[in-house]
Length: 393
Ligand SMILES: [Zn+2]
Image (cartoon, rainbow, N blue to C red):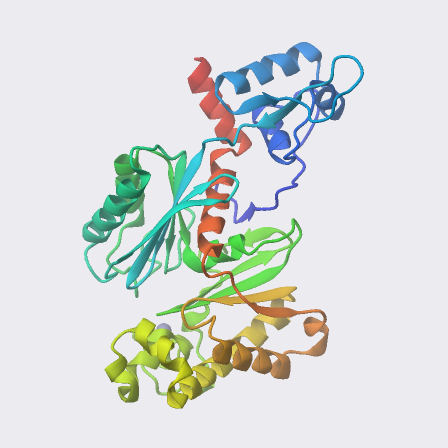
């Protein structure tokens, strides 16, 4: 549970052997959407028939496995396929931003069933923000019970929710309390994760993907996936690039209290803080003006170039196959173009081979990532074992 790198690939091969646990059997079934027949499972795991059937019975009883009718007719009695029962299981995905919260209800197949967006002020008391977000989530759920919920936060999130790491955006928040309050209000397990990191998980296309996802909205954050594994770092701060000092920001005061941070010049907050753009009032109105106002476009491009400098260092360090840039500011063509150009100028050639620099799927990626993380956590073998022992005992 405290592993720094959580597997997010979908074709992970679980350990098989005569003593394969029910949790690992479920992991095996989850890895193949078509499912496996009983004969397949006997062959793959090498288990004794009686042990296999006993574990499958427990998974059936817990509603985690179902038997599906084979599609093609075969001679004799066709083998039935056993599948992970992902039907009618909903995950609530909450993206809490600086000024808005996105609330999405997803199926385990990653289909968005319902969505809402409400204004929030992240500087308000934690109970106020949680009350607003959960209130809207309950309205959206309309009596349906999610199997779990994921919450994306615009700040470093420690897997163990240790306090004291974040002193800027969520300085006054207690993540342990946040999780407990949400679990009791929603009556399901709740997982907390950094928003950009959730977005990175949502951008994973293949089991061995290496990618960096960057979110540029009010603040700046990034998520790192190395060969299918999410990198959280020793204390959950991996990818928190907004407060890296860069020469272009020398003398610029950052919200964190220091001078010279990347976020002090390239974030939405920094762009909007320019007195020249004060009349736009909100970041949304500012980015919407990019088409008509050449000064807005120029400022956005300059911010993209500065981010590109920082990302070139990441590209050189991690050699990702893809850099996905999202967020209200990040997806703007003028920002992305300038950012891409700077990465290509600054990074060393070997790290640029086949590198894609693309807009992130801003509409869905964070919610999809949260949904995937919730599924991985809910159906992790040890958690399934725990669930079955409660179920059976
Ligand atoms: Zn800073």
